[in-house]
Amino acid sequence: MKPIEINHIQGLLDQYVNKEVYIHLETTNGAYASHFDDKAYNVGAYIRNAKVIYEQAKIVGDGKSYRVGLKTRIGWVYAEGLTDWTIHEEQLLLAGHDREGRLMVALEISENPFHN
Image 1 (spheres, helix red, strand yellow):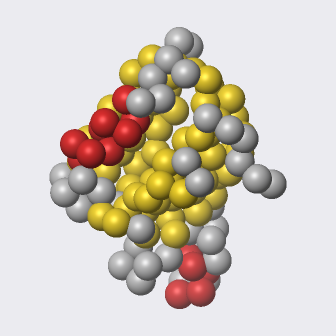
Image 2: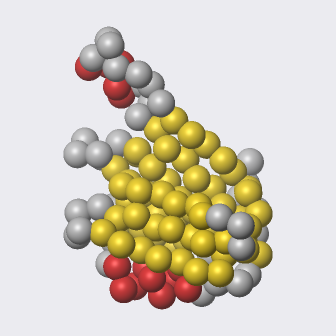
């Protein structure tokens, strides 16, 4: 994966505007939290192959981490804490990693369903 370049990613996101796409969105601190602090909560969210059409995409950030928002007709999908990106099998993959390189958030967009 490569570090996010905001203008490049905005262009990639715009390629999917008004198209039916599949979204994979995942957040987690996994077991990381409880390894170092037994009072920490393990939290996460996961959705795969949600079919959406978004009419606007926006990426913002401070150069360290980024937020991507996808505006649909009836609401928003967003991921925050993104740091890296790649294209894999014609899918846009955005991820956020912590200082140790562990996955904390992932947002993937594809015109085809993701493999199970």
